[in-house]
Amino acid sequence: MHNEMISEGSATVFSNKHIQTSELPRLQELALTPISRRYRIINLSAISAIALVLLSIVTALRFQPLFELPEDLVFAYPFICSVIFGLAFLWATYHFFADTKITYAVREQDVSKQSGLIFRKLSCQPILRVQHVELNRGPLERWAGLASLQVFSAGGEMYTFEIPGLELEKAQKIRQFILDHKDVSAR
Image (tube, rainbow, N blue to C red; front, side, top):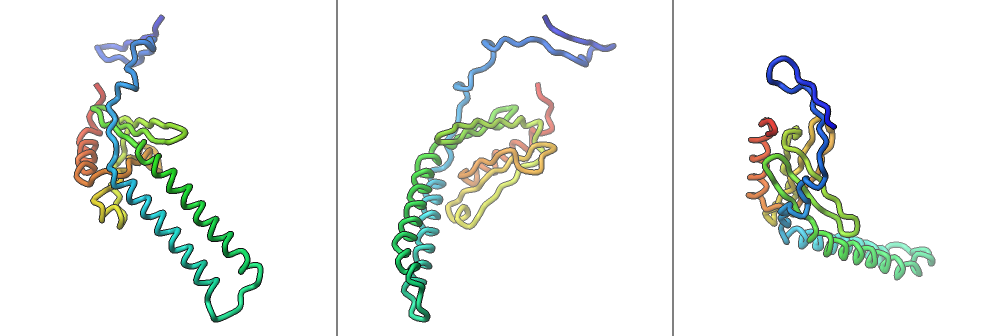
């Protein structure tokens, strides 16, 4: 059974035909491309630097000669250092494995991103619904020649999704492709 209303002329105003799920394309056939390996190196370096700075601050406060620390803080020093090191280790371990799982695909009608280590997520943005696209590059990304591509949906305040760790030239090409095709009607 299907619903279809046709107005005067040849334009279809409403169509709601039943689609067999067995006829839909399989997501496994989506050719996903991994992001740059340098993205993981940047994340691991940033985590190491943050942990080192925090450990340096705690150590400088613990051993500074200007004033006497309360005895409880002196005894808490090894515990605080262990917590900082433990959290940095967990954070780095997560990024070590999760960053390799970030993949993307650009097709004629949509842009897709898959990510997640434990909980896998596949986001798909129709190019026709793209409001605008931004390239973001922080200092570490500029140094590594990388960029993050943010895709904004029509009617949305925040970006629909972000593809981090793209080589700059590739990110610029994807951005230009989306901008060139966002006003082309779906076939």
